[in-house]
Image (cartoon, rainbow, N blue to C red; front, side):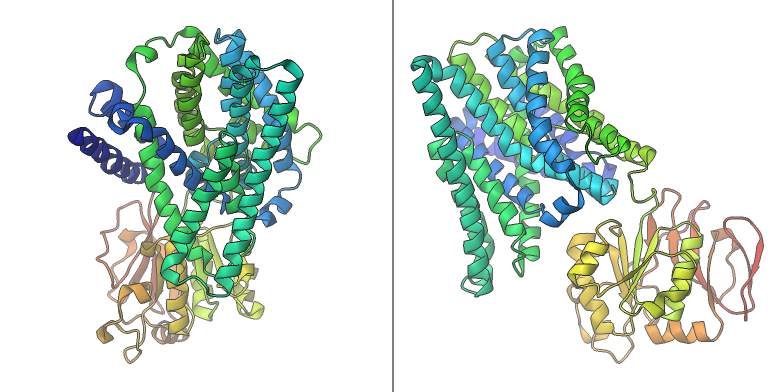
Length: 609
């Protein structure tokens, strides 16, 4: 038994994180590799049997993990996004959900051949879309803000509602037949109201309690994250004592209410929980897939495969199209949202609970619910995960091209000239400063600008539509540059935030022993400080984007490589630069009087003296 559990933990934790890392490197949805891993270590190789290895504790543990996942998802929902998205979110949650349920049930019965009982449970499970799949894909797809808000709110709000709907349907199928008609309906409504009200009140109350305690510093810093997780689990467990799956509403409401209380310091705590959720999601997908039975999978027939195709191409598009009639969604948004609807961990977890319960109650075909739901999960993840970004670009709903976006903080004359050169070379770039006059030259050249203090909420909202992939803090204040990089490193990536080299006598200079944790990576050479770059610019040096084969002047200073795949690679004193490929383009600071071939049209560009 001990060896079985140890092997299971090794497969789940080690294999799950390895799959996440590999998926990140390959830029594919991680769930694809997680499902493949679970299938291999479970049904195929038999290295783990979760139900046998973990016993009766498996399902409660899965429920607690899902509670933390939906709580973290709720923390991503800001009501300001809801106001900006108009009535679209209401249509996708209040209207589309019941239509999805009806159409999914009909498809399961008419196409999949399920009896009405299992068909209705299947339809209830599949009203949800998966935030565990949607949110990671949205981070890389760079959708415009409104479309991203539609998908994010629908996924997070519908998850607990779908779980509750499934629990109600099962209660009707299993519990109601044992009671008298009118009494059973009344009891069921009271039961439902009790569970939902307690869950909502507990979620909102927990959020106000945390906000009150955090603002008065009543909880030590080291205990804040444990306090959040403990309350999220309490908000899940207590309502579940009253009604199955009501706890998911409690955890989700807790997250949403807390996110909109704007508690100081919550951003740092959220990053830890995001990392925890990555681990939990990895484990959950591997465990649930490994628990599938090959014998049951062998029963998947042509009608079940036809049902999966119907969910993709008929049920979801039709439900969204009907729910958004006469709404403020554009035709392109309706088409896009109607196609994108991958299912995730909540659908998988609820299916794992619903199928056995129906089978135990004597419903034929109950054992097919879990593998059929997994078939839909795999199909939607593959179809929607890989098509989301290309479809968004085709419909004009993506905010950027393939080239990575750069944000430059500080609109000094040399920095403005640099971003103008990058903008003319086709690199998505935005320049940020608190003084509008400083950005005048960049604005006249067509460069996107943002007048804001970067660490303020207004800047956060301003960059939400165009989130940067890289950041360069290029102000004269070296301590401010370090603060900006330190603040944004967890969001953008520590390897993607840069600042100018500190002057030789500055406290941030490497020789003083200041660690990388207190600053960004150095942009360019170790002596490329603000004063050094400004001095060269005043002396007539200029920024040019060119090809590697046009270099050769000893005074040329390469600063940035624009790779053929659109990625950006910075020259830095903190790492050794790779050799530029033939198809790359280079941002170069060139001495006055030099002539250089332009990278785009092969004309000779004379840099003014």
